[in-house]
Length: 200
Image 1 (spheres, helix red, strand yellow):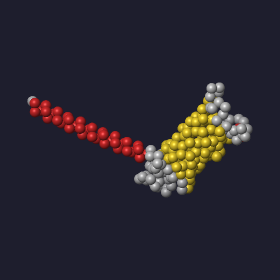
Image 2 (cartoon, helix red, strand yellow; image 1 turned 45 degrees about the horizontal axis):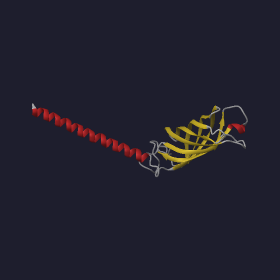
Image 3 (cartoon, one colour; image 1 turned 30 degrees about the vertical axis):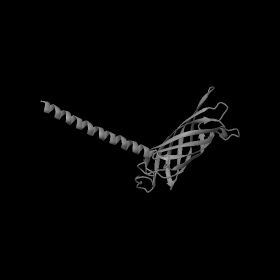
Image 4 (cartoon, helix red, strand yellow; image 1 turned 180 degrees about the vertical axis):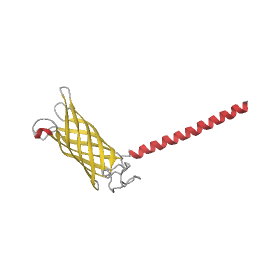
C-alpha cells in the first residue's frame, strides 16, 4: 500500500513539474513576443496627414475645416503617434496637440480598415479636453505611400461647455508597408500579400 501511495505521489509530482515547465516556457515565449512587437528602437517611423476634413455642421467653410499632421512609430498592426493641428481656418484658429493610437483592424488586398482613438488638449483659454474616435478606409497605392477616407467624432469639453463634432475628410500616410499578416515588409517573417502590395 505504501509503494502504491509513493508511486502515485511521484507521478503527481512529475506531472506538476512538467506542467510548470511548460507554462513557464509559454510565459517566456509570450513575453519575448510582446517585447519584440513593442521594440521602440526597431519600430519604423511614419507620417500621417489629414490636409482636409470638414465638420457636418452649419456655418462658414472657414469654421468647418480642420487640418492636422501626425508623426509616430509603427508596432506591427498599431500606429502610435502625436498629432498637431487646428480646428478651423480662421486667423484666430485654435491649435491642438493630440496623442493617437491607430489599429489596422481588417485587410483585403491593398485595402485596410483602420480605427483611431485619440486624446489631447486644445490651446484655447479654457484648455479644453479633446477626444477622438474615427475610422479610415485606406489603400496602399504606392510603395510606402497610401491614401484613405476618414470619418469620425471630435468631443470637446471644459468647465463651461462641451460639444461634439462629426467630420469627414481625406488622409495620407507615408511609411513602411504592412503585409497581410500584420508584419512590416522588410522586418521579421511577415508574408507579403498576393497582389504584391502591403497594407499601408
